[in-house]
Length: 321
Image (cartoon, rainbow, N blue to C red; front, side, top):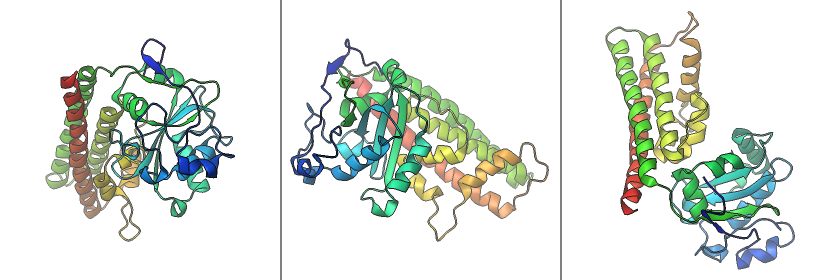
């Protein structure tokens, strides 16, 4: 996303807290802005859809020797913006100048250690850690929504945060996302059909499992690109699911372990991808293969629907421009 003086609207980096929170955090949260200026946002903590003190604590932990961000934005449903995560989640864009030592997975672990789930009012934290040069040079719907609608939680002393002065080209964004949607949806559905044929007609569990696992990767690639406007740089279904699980509660219901029913499909798909290609001793019972195929098929339908609704949003916005 371009962030230069030609297209951005100046906004000073300052601390602005809801009135009821100021007295509690005045001494310890000097750089944390819980309500962005210039936006018509609620100013009382009781009106916020998230806990402002909890959000401030998240920022404090992220900046306590782990990251040196230029700014941190909270975007999505919690601030009344374009929905990103389906369940209640802190969708956070952390923009850094230099490549940090820790990636988003490690950052989530840090927060889990510092703020265990049982102590959070909102369980899920969805982190995006992006370099400033990438953010300044790309104009995607994901970056636009975050910067245009997001709540500025933190801004460094030497950085002047600015909001977009005009919308991105949503017609172009729609065409780009639709191309990736059609490409990977077709590949994924073809593989699921081949998996079913291999299983029912050829009784080839190995091939059916391999096709199923690869189909899941294709669908996650499709979902990621439609939402973020950039390719996912990994092909690990475990990491991909962790990255995108909050985009749809239904997707979480398909694959997340509930500690009563052992839902192990995602790690098993990763094992399938690693073993079916090169290891002759791979084995999977036909009942297990059928279970994973059924779950991936359900997930594929959910992902298609989720990505399709996002495309409709881009198309609708493009028609208004």
